[in-house]
Image (cartoon, rainbow, N blue to C red):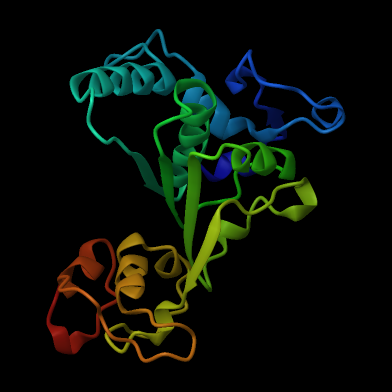
Length: 224
């Protein structure tokens, strides 16, 4: 997905509701997101051996089926993702609130999410009363800080920043990939009590998960 960082921000016009009100600012500075994120979400693939439908079409079809199935119940829609998946989750959550429902609460949990769009997109995102986003990132992870403000991108959602270096269970590392590791970040969230707080896990969560795709756990825990 790193190839998408060089993409010029693209208008989210394909995702805007035809019934939405437009302001003069929408013409001067329309809501934009990365061309890569938008393309991944909306593009169909007629040559795919698995499905020719776009992610957007698949999602909306599934949501409609689920809402029909649980009609009359107290519903919430929650989307989450990590890294590229977090960027797509943000676009998806916006689309659901913009076009699918204004009544059902929609929440997006974005882990280590690269910046998705410009300020106009963030303003449009935040204009939906039923739509909220929480962005969780590691202090030393560079991914949530790109493509960057120079290209017009901004952060999205309420920010929760943790620091995996605080954990007494993890090795010291200078590997940038380790700072972006989902399981390490989830481990940090579990034990995080603020910058000045003592690291103390809140729930029982297997330490072995940290080494699912890394070797970050200290050797004394004997997890390969």
